[in-house]
Length: 97
Image (cartoon, rainbow, N blue to C red; front, side, top):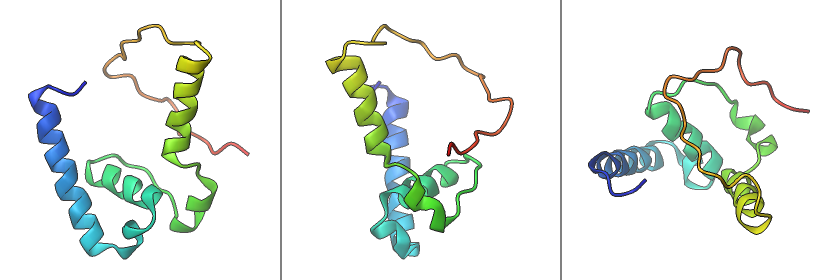
């Protein structure tokens, strides 16, 4: 997806947001999950996660690493997919136990 002018703009925007968060919120300095969540909030995504619950959330890198393993090493679900604009969830995502 890189290479589009909007990607360059978004990267610069995210960099400014991350730098501001690192400056203003010390928790972002050593907690990638908190930094990602706060960055998404600054970008306008609305959700709530309490700081104390972050331990229960898997690292985002773990999730994407599992996806890459399934798609590339196990050769599953790797066909092209074009996401549809405007698709929304009808109910909030619930925490799995």
